[in-house]
Length: 164
Length: 289
Image 1 (cartoon, each protein chain N blue to C red):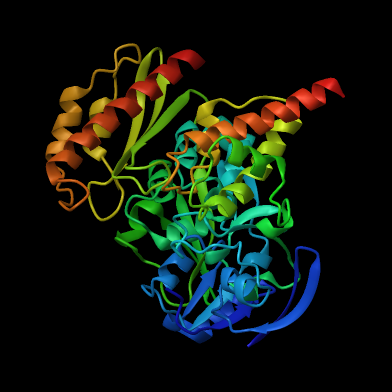
Image 2: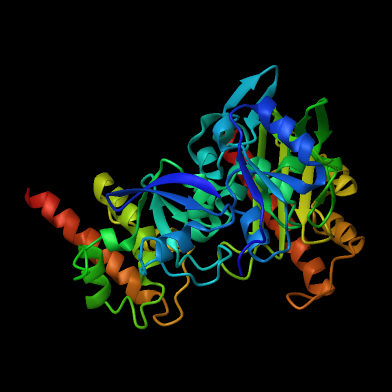
């Protein structure tokens, strides 16, 4: 067993983990963060994407033992129970989800992309949006609704910035 | 699935990592980005008893010296896309890096990991062969320099020995009048390719003076195409018609025949991709000169 300290969504905890335990399982089982979804458990679907020290990372390809002293954000830290982050709202209004299994992964993958585009003050073309989300698989929407959601939220951000 | 049991060791120095790898022999594996090794472990295709975490070792610089660009084993793929030493010297390499997995994998995966994993159609093994790369492997006993063309023994098999670890890759700096391109075909964006081809050219007065061609999908490892390379010498950049030489090359191939593609399809695909990569490399050379 390995002793590690993890800061997850603002809560710091010391815990003892078996070397082989995946970060995804530790987040779900020790931290009760059921928004971390496990689809394929081998890095093909993107459902388990979380932020590790601020950057998207597949938590199924990460051993918790490797994360000592690191900071983790899961979808629970975004928009709370009401899921009211602008990107989450846009997913709802643009039919960016149906069953919802892949959604937390898409949200965690796309938030930094939306922030980057907003900071650069530009609307990405469809190809760029599809490349940004290419590591996430959705079996319900056919992706077009997700592309629309990303476009909508970046459009809103750019408009807000233009008024400010 | 979940990995079988192992012991985790975080190395604080290269010396410590190499000592641990020597101690564990066949039972030990270094882990860096984990983008290839952890899927293999989750599927239990790999069951190392010891993992030596090398993420803290540095080994992540890209520097130019003595006519080579040296890339540390822990350089993450996305770094190349903003690195002038790579952008300015290796256009084919940049094309290839864009085709690696997807953004999250490119942010975490390392060159050492990709080469050691040796997927038959992964981009970096092909690119290192194409650019006459040398792979530097270290062990407690010292260093070995291994030409990329002799590094891969088969699918997921390399000449690395127990206790050895990749520490860097060196690519010779090409002359100023050079060009290149890489093209691949995959079933879905970010998947491993069915086949891929990279071409580099040196040129003078509108003609190719030296060419390198590397392709994957035609065998258990990526491969160079020496006869085709020779045939491309003298080719006019403005009329890169090499269909006959490419056909002569693909006829010699004996690609795998499986559920994702037949041998005939792969042979034809390698030919098409080679034509495309060559055409792009030639037009880039024309633009630059």
